[in-house]
Length: 398
Ligand SMILES: Cc1ncc(COP(=O)(O)O)c(C=O)c1O
Figure: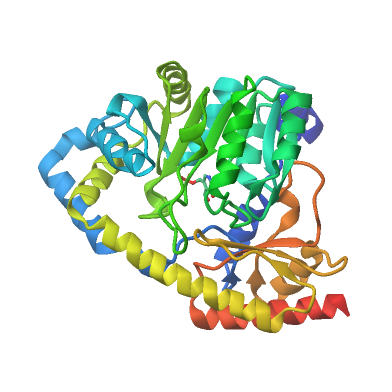
């Protein structure tokens, strides 16, 4: 069969799909000795390998074949209970296991949101810039994205009000804690202002909260969900506090939406791995997660400070950058018309990768922007990589 014959059989929705530039860059980086600031990778030196190994051995010994069977689509009941009692309670929300759906990473939660809510042409309001893989997950359902610019302390309420009025979006997707890609955290006032505006519109709030636990400065703030008085979905993950390889995320929402999401999940993968869910639960009940997260936060703060130091001392005047209070990313705006993609072409040749800003924009991109991850590279790699980046930026700025 030739390519043209095959092409015409694809669904319209895949024709415009683009691969995630970050995953492509990471794939290229994995095969070589590359310094990567590209992905949202946790520090590999801090994975609790022994605790997970012990938990896995114990589950197989104590649960035997029960852990190797298909299981419920909603997820392992004790783990749902843990999410309700611990993850939601920490966010100031009272919930029970019945309100929780466990997903294969919070990425699956985003896909299920798309499946359950988005019709072709529906307006979906997104931060600008936004989490790249949310754009990708929703794009499959052919929405019309409505971008709202992100400021230092969250979304501009005037712009948000105007977009809500004009577009009546079906969904509003927000990452208020240490947003990916910018590292921006919405202020308390901004959260209240947003909730107030959303309350006046018939829209579904989708709040994605993978980085909440990784706060190393400032005080915890409640999710927008807590102030909102409407149809809403809140999602979180164990990827950033334990390991992304577990692929375990969760969703909290109303009974009706949960029921639809469970059915959509059945169509996707029947159920998440029961073995992994039991290992995770075992790990959470025996391992001191709070102490581990405190250690992560100490180290990530130090790594953030080092990266900020290199930006301040090496990058040209006129460079703007965020100073995140948690999470994993710094967002950089280069002076003048420097193209981050051109910059990447130059740095790849010297073994350094990062994520150019273009793909993070649901609307018109700002091409002189880039996302830097500060948690993955070690100190030596970071110093070397940041020097190479700075040299190539200077070569392009002339
Ligand atoms: C904002 C945001 N949402 C969701 C995810 C997906 O996380 P996971 O599928 O590993 O739970 C990520 C991962 O980087 C993220 O940054």
